Image 1 (spheres, one colour):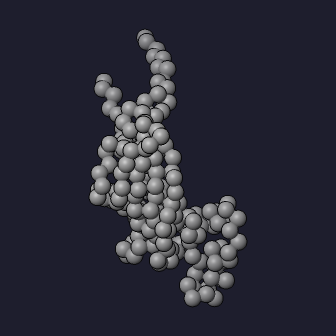
Image 2: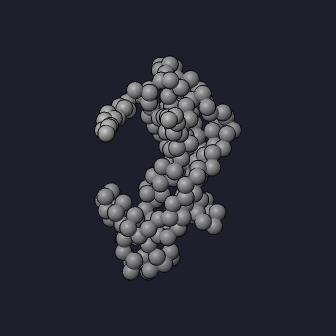
Length: 172
């Protein structure tokens, strides 16, 4: 029996300036997602959790919490961009050009803009990535720049953090 290694994401050496990753997972946002995230973050804006209030605005229905939108689209990018992250350094130029509503499905893609060595940590490199999130009709709902530190291949805890299972077999 062969043990086949699963996908462990990209390492610093795998990124090239200009590469675009179309992240594979879309995600439909539910009313529960919006309500829970809004309550967990103590966001008291009626527009996110009071349908009657929202009906009296120009949107006509509840808007999804914009911090949820940013978090979801960042999360969608992880398997392609930051599975081997050392640390996020920042999110810049966050833009929310179109509203997100409960029931929308979001997709994301990211482009590598910059790549450089770390001046203080030889085991990592630094990337600047532009990510966009868009809905089921293709309207961009969020865009941002993210700067992050990514491990080089063979560095970091990936090779050593996971124990092997203790296999005990009965015979006879």
